Amino acid sequence: MAEILGILVNSDKNLSHLISIVWAARSKGKEVMIFFTHRGVLLTQDPRFKELESLAEMSLCKESYEAHNLDPELEIPGIDESGFANQSRHGDLIYYSDRYLVL
Image (cartoon, rainbow, N blue to C red; front, top):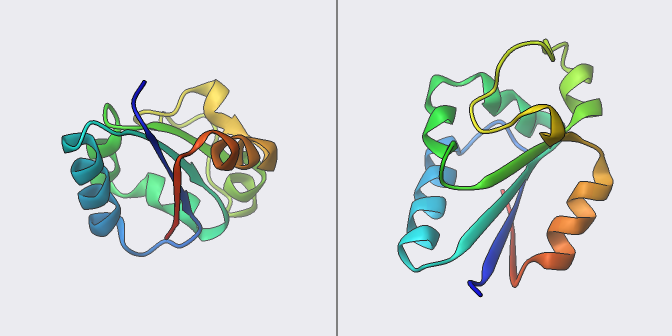
């Protein structure tokens, strides 16, 4: 079983850095799980966000998404309806990850 890198994204900065980290982890055979919260949910609106679609299991904090007045009806590459979660998903990410990173 591959090791899992868990990444919490709570900032709307560093999308390029996030993409690079995910590519590096995948090239080393790691699985990647990402949870977006607070201002991190704003990254879903960046056109480059789609680069993460097939590289990581992604979810986001529904409360944060709605608090930033983002439309939950818009399609987000790599995040379906089940990816709109609460902070318990963040807890799962921490529990199942072998390594954990905060951006």
